[in-house]
Length: 263
Image (cartoon, rainbow, N blue to C red; front, side, top):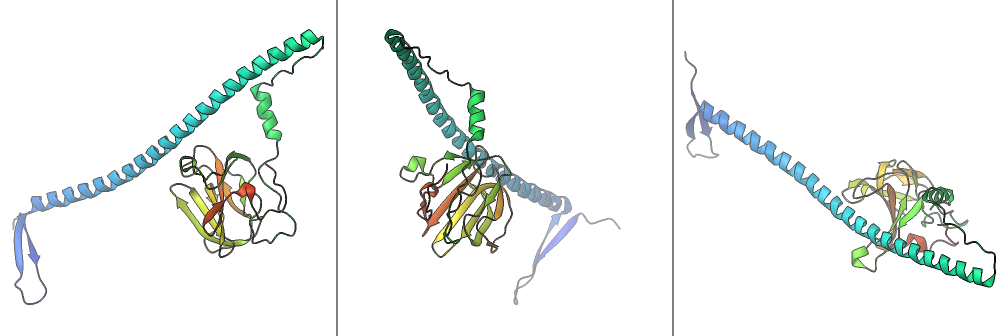
């Protein structure tokens, strides 16, 4: 018996309505199945690639903004260098006319400057003695402040501080609390949000690895993450926020700290 070249598809409605059916050739059915599969795969690939394109576009915009800001800083540094050079010449002439034996100190080279930076104290602040452990205090990672708190200007809106540090730097909880979020966020990367009371939360963004889970109790000073470069980030750092009634406050001007902060 030769194999049928047709396939019958039956439509059986609920109730008393009559059944309906139609025949199509096998190759047509196979073509429809293959075409449907190709379309589905194409849709999945499109949205996957499109998501990456959007992410890269956002990163490009961020890098362009960062590049423009660095160019402005570079221009200011050049102006300062020129002003300093002129000042050195004026001071040299004045001391020469006054008969004073004074030599203006030479500027250190870049390697010496970076070596001096390495010797500076990091961003972590010691917690004042006697402070309520449910109140956030100090900063959560060892490093240097690379971007300050800014909420007054919409174009420079930054509701926390960035602490520049190498990837894998321990991130510490700044107060007792409960982990409210431990997720990946498209902006903040590996993100932790800790609730310390009904009104106070802290946020830790761009981590390489999260060491705690949602619902977990954490103690002040306990290790909760390792810093990284995830999400919309141009360099390894930790983004840290304090929010009171969901409104950001400056971690470097924290009203819960009783002592002067190191920076």
